[in-house]
Structures are given as C-alpha cells and as structure tokens.
Image 1 (cartoon, helix red, strand yellow):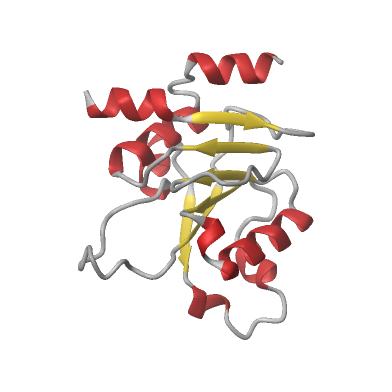
Image 2 (cartoon, rainbow, N blue to C red):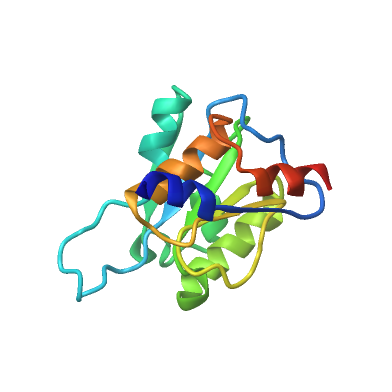
Length: 164
C-alpha cells in the first residue's frame, strides 16, 4: 500500500526541451546530501541511485555534501564528473533550504540543461527540463522515482504531462 501511494504521489513536470523519457541508457546520478537532521539521529536511507541501478544496470551514483563542493571555483565541475555521454539525474532534498544545493543545481543546469531533476523533499521550484517531485524521501519514494525514470511505471498524470 505504501509503495502504491508513493507511485501516485510523484508529479512529473516538463519545461522547455525535456530530455528523453523514460531513460534508455544507464544514467549518472548525483544525490546532493544536506546535513542530517539531528531529530532523526542516524543516517536514513534515501535517494534513487540504488533502486535505479537495479532497473538500469550500469547506473553510477555519487552522493555529494556541502563539504565536497566547498572551495571549488565551480561546483558544476565536480557534479559533472562521470556524466560525459550519459543521462544526468540530479537528486535533491529541500533545495530551497540549502543555498549550496540551489547554487550547485543552478550551475549544473546551466551546463547540462538536459539533466533530470528529482526533488525528494518539498518541491518549491521546478527546475530542469524534466522534473520529478516525490513529495518525500522515503525508500518507497526513491523506488517510485526510479521506476518512472526507467519506464517501469508511468503514472497517469505523467502521461498527461508528456502528451501536452
């Protein structure tokens, strides 16, 4: 039941020149990891790298935190490592709450406007040619987004958005 709810909750938005969807090649996934919430305590599983790699073998994933991008002249260069010739999926959580995430996302999209953005928190602003909002960062939300990107499940509302 929870997985079905997560699948129904995903909102797919296309703007401008949307990249090919669903993905037909293994992508490079970059997950921007904001600091851990002290109320949670331990690291909680989130993201789409692992479930997407099961659906599209050859998928690579990296998780970057603020410290990984600090001091770089252009955070996009670090984000783009490993993405040459491959679809790029940028995964964020509450990007509006973390200026370093918003900056890295904007700079990366300036270089790779074909990147797919997956927002696993509160979707405040739509960015990227193809944007998925999961409305949560649970394992079920990550699985639902991965299924949609791999073409394993396309919710009715995504079909309507793509047809428009």
